[in-house]
Structures are given as C-alpha cells and as structure tokens.
Image: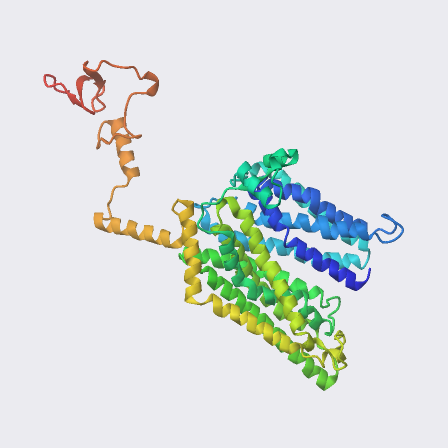
Length: 554
C-alpha cells in the first residue's frame, strides 16, 4: 500500500470516527441507554475492527496478497463506528454516576480525571506499540485488541455497581397522515394501497420535542468557542511533526514520539488541577466561569505556538551558523503547554455539554461537542493549510521539505504566526463580557430545567450567610431541633424537662401495635410520665389531653 493511499485511509477513518458519535448518541438517548451502547458498540464494532486490522499484518493469512478489503472493513467501517459510539457515551455514562444536585461540584473534577484516563491510554500506546513494532508488527497491533478486551471485561464486572438510567427520550409512531404527506411529496399518492407503505407506517418513528430551553445548536455554538484552541492542538499531528522531522533525534525519541510529551503533561498537570486546584477553589466557593476556562486553554495554546515559533527561529539560526540541526527536545515545551491547555479548554467543553443538555439528549450533546472539538478544527486546518501552501515550498518550488536544507528555504514560520493569531483570537473572544454573560444565561436556564435547587458555590454562600444572620438575631444559645428532641426524650424517660407539644413524627404516643380504637366520649386513663405508679384521668379536648376538673393529679 502506498503512503498516499494509507494517508487517505487514515483521514477518512478519522472523519468517520467524528461523525458516528451522532449514531451512538441516538441509540443511547432513544433506545439502548449509554451502558448498552458502550457494551454493544465495543463488542460488535470496536474490537472486531481492531482485530481485523491486526489480522492483516499476518502474511498470507487473509490471502496471498495484502487484503485491501479487510483493511477497509476494519479501518473505515467497524473501528470508526465502534469508537464513535463509545466516544459519545462513555463520558456521559461516567458523569451520570454522580448525583446531578448533591454531587454537582464533583463533576468538574470528574471530567479532568476522565481526560487524564484517556491520555493514559494514549501514552501507553504511544510508547509501547512503536517499541514493540520495531521487534514484531503483528504483536504490536494485537496489543490494543487485548487491552481493549480486558477493559470491556472489567467494565462488565462492575455492572451491578453502575447507575444505569433508562432512555428518557420517548419515541412515538409517526401518524399515518404525516406519512401520507411525506409519501405524497415523493409522488406516492396511492400509498394506502401499497402494503410496503403500511409496513413503513408501523416502524417510522419520530422523537418527541424536548421541553428544555437549550438545544443542540446552542451547545454547538458554545463548543465552537474552543475551536481556536483546537486549531493549535491539531498541529501536533501536522506541522509539529513536519518541524520535528528536520530536528536531531534524542536517542530513540524522534518527532513522532514527542507526542507523548502532551500525554505526560495532561497526566501531571491534570492531577494537580483536577484534584488539588479545583477542590481548593470549591472550598472557597470560587468557580472559574466556563468562558474563562476556554480563554485560559486558548492562552496556553497561544503560548505553545509561540514556543514553536521560537523553535523555528532557532532551527534557522543554528543552521545558518553551523549547518547542523537542533535537538528534537526543543519541542517538549509546545507539547507540554498544549497539554495544560487541554485540561482547561477540552475538559470544560465536555463538562458544559453534559451540564446544560437536557436529560434526554446527554449523549447527543456529547456527540455535537465532539464534532466541534475534533471535526471542525481539523477541517479548518485543512483549509488553512491549502490556502497557505506556498509557505511550505522549498527554493526549488516543490513541497518536499523533510530535509533540513529544503526546510530552511521554506516559510513555515509564517504559518505559525497565523496560528498564533488564531489562538489569541480565541483568548479575546472568550474574555468578552457579552460572551461570558451569554454562556452564564445558558447555564442558568439549564438549572431551571432541573426544577431543583442546584448546589453551586453562590447558593451555598447565600445559605451560609442567612444561617449566620439567624444565629446573630436569635443569640448564640439558639436551641437546635436536635437539642429539643433530646430534652423531650429525657422528659419521657425521667419525667422532667420541657414537653414537645408539636404534633409530628417525634411526638409521644401509644405503640402502633396496640392502637385500639376508643370511644369518642369516654375519658382516657393514661399513666403520667412524671409520677410512676399513680393514675390520672384525662379528657381529650381537641388535640390536647387535660385532667378532669374533679380529679387533681398526684
């Protein structure tokens, strides 16, 4: 297989992988739920696709020549469909394990930890698979199959511990009149006489319209605010690789393995931000606005591109002076900064899509967010690269710049400056007060849809303030309900202390097992708790027992 065909296969597979989340989201929201969509998508598409790709590496197993049909089925069909179904549901399913109200503050840290777990797999695969591939390609390709199989097994073993809400997006049969209008518009006016049309009427379904004020379009527009950062993020697999290809390897570390620096950054800084920084802010009732998180991520993206520009000038300076290449470790700085930006921008986009989307469309909102985070930026980068193609041409007029002599005559630094402008534009847009207010209104509307008080730092702060005001107005020795209940229990046991006269679940009364009806006009004879061994006749007046006038209590 030529490199051109292989590159086209990878591009198509990536495009399909960022489109199929919509299919997985529809199945999860309407029919199967997130749990079954993840399980079935992995068992019937994800693992078979990886297995088929791995089998093509065994010589003469699927034919005497390389089996292009098998690689197309695995790489362009099964694998992207499976990974798309999992991508749309796995983060939503994890977030649903938290109570949406009582544990709302934990969801912020969850999405940071979720993104860290993704990069654990990326780091393991980025280091282990290339090293094993140098020894045996077949074994290297079977590693993801085995690890994914173990992951599904561990996922299934925890089934009894999961919260598995059923799909709430109910489906209705489409009315026959509506179907008549559809088929009539297609020229099938005699559809009632067609048995196939009657069969279609029984299976054509349409979802009920959501009552939520927030739609998928609104979520997509907010997710578009992280497109500038993801344009910078997409350079890790394009221009950063081109730049690193003319740099000197550091032992086994080459330009392709420098991608692992991004995963290391996400793991290191993600743990610090998700488990230390965000919890400390939560203790102080401080929450960073969503747009500010996007701005912080874009700022780190701009800093990463700035480091790439500095590296570009260093390449030209050293080449002009000595004719040698600089170390590939210079690229560690851009990759580390991109990793920090991912923690703020990408994880915040995941969190926002889950938090504001209607209950019946969580997975669909996740799919829309994935499309804006992964699909749109890559398309934009392709268009940008084609528009700036003249900057990637050497002095001979060809686009072959993989050698340092050719690279030195190209104008790649101009492309990096354009990327810097895009990233800074993302910072500027996300710090605008109008954009911040717009996103906050969307979040407030989402809280109204829950129809329950959401535990937020502002609400907790107001409740604490009102409690302190009550304490100051009534004095520091205010008697709490727990103290009053204890005193009433002492009264029932020892016959002294204040009596709890309010009727409720804590009132004293006869045992429910001996609840015998009494005559409405007959006096009740009860034992006084204050004087054991003596009886006093009480008369019920309304809801109160009083002693009979002609009988004084002992």
